[in-house]
Length: 289
Ligand SMILES: *[C@@H]1O[C@H](CO)[C@@H](O)[C@H](O)[C@H]1NC(C)=O
Image 1 (cartoon, rainbow, N blue to C red):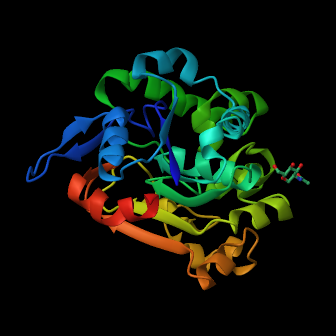
Image 2: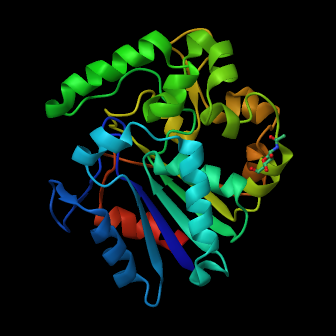
């Protein structure tokens, strides 16, 4: 099958725009661009067609465009692009890095044609984030700005539409506000209503693979990478996907998918998006065939 690799280039807080893969036999990590991931996949699977979608181009550009994007609009743009690509007609596997994980899940839920076969979420934040993750040194003033904006009104329409960070902000102490006003995440997670189409489409996947980074210092709480989150009403204790209302009421079809053996939970040592090429080849490559 063809593959779509979504590399959300931006959101430098949640989304470092380059990923790190250590060279074979190398214990330290070298930055590796998404282009290298594409090349690596092409090298490993002969004849594969890899489409790499970059949303946001660089950290610098992000400060200009990246902040001001409506994720819902981006999803529909990507759906259009996928539908127009003749090479994807027979279906494709999708691999999303960091926020690309939940982004591609939205694509699976909203746009069943062409069909997505396997969805691989690498460090995705399926229940959003709460708390400001580590800020890369040089942009700390921007982090302060974001922190202020989120504190003062993550759920105002203006902030929701224009600050991508806010679209993944999940405040367990203000659950009602989150459910009511989160324009992207609460919608794809069926918080307001159950959209049967989302539920049906997601279950069309053959596998939904979620990768969690065991030493992740960027995503908080890290449970979100396996679809868990903080329990509602407090900000300390977490719950797993299986303990959540979403799963117990099976509002999104995830319980049915687990029963059918479609959910794959993987973890790896390392900080956000850091893994070795060997690990990638052994554990993720099989889902791209
Ligand atoms: C459910 O999702 C589909 C696919 O995105 C959309 O077309 C439809 O309008 C949604 N239904 C409701 C009630 O929101």
